Amino acid sequence: MLVESSKGIVGIHNVSKCYGKEHVLKKIDLDIMKGEIFGLLGPSGAGKTTLVKQLVGLDLPSAGDIFIFKEEIPSLKLIERIGYMAQSDALYTELTAKENLEFFAALYGLKGSKKKERMKEVMDIVQLTDHLKKLVSNYSGGMKRRLSLAIALLHDPELLILDEPTVGIDPVLRKSIWSAFYTLKEKGTTIIVTTHVMDEAEKCDRLGMIRTGELIAVGTPEQLKQVTKSSSIEEAFLVYGGA
Ligand SMILES: Nc1ncnc2c1ncn2[C@@H]1O[C@H](COP(=O)(O)OP(=O)(O)OP(=O)(O)O)[C@@H](O)[C@H]1O
Image 1: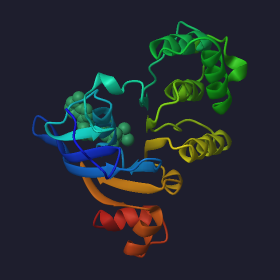
Image 2: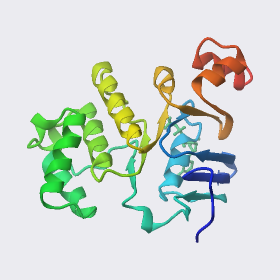
Image 3: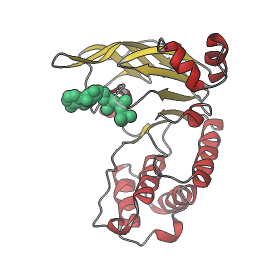
Image 4: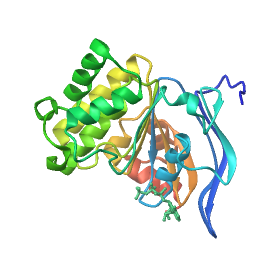
């Protein structure tokens, strides 16, 4: 099904999710624009993962609908246009990193020199080029996160959806990964990133604050601080949360 939407490339309309009696998402309305880095910020259990899983069609809303590139989700048509990094790594641990990349490259139809080029580019971004031939079972937790990120970037998707991409990654590499995000943004890639880390939230163009399934505020980090007269995003979050 197609709809016209001039506002954003991701349209989340009145989305709710219930597990039994638990309301995990409550009437979420949100538009995300092309080329922005949009952060979903909230404490553990707030509903961030549930929402991003719905964006990629891994979970379905109990009510409401989601459109991406004017296509209603879930849609297999979008598989090549979206890169997704889940919170738990989806890697073949009995294979090497290179073999994992080869597998996902085949899935996305990447071949020949283009495939080689992309594999090198993404492994450079996550600084794993020297560990291509290592079995993933011998990777550390942080290395697995980095490989998962490389895989999400592999087919150069227009929209990247990253669930806590830098958890377990040291500050130096985290900084370089964020600079890669800015480079991608400059060439028009849209990035949705979940986080509960405040300094990371500051790096986003806009933030959506989620608490117990409710989208309690949306705006640029500056706007959210100004409106609440806060000196930090953490403080702004507490104000919006009613503290
Ligand atoms: N399959 C499921 N069945 C029942 N409850 C679920 C299921 N998946 C998620 N939940 C519940 O939904 C709520 C939101 O979980 P979710 O994983 O979306 O939070 P989160 O904000 O991503 O947290 P975290 O930062 O810890 O990953 C939690 O209370 C969780 O227990």
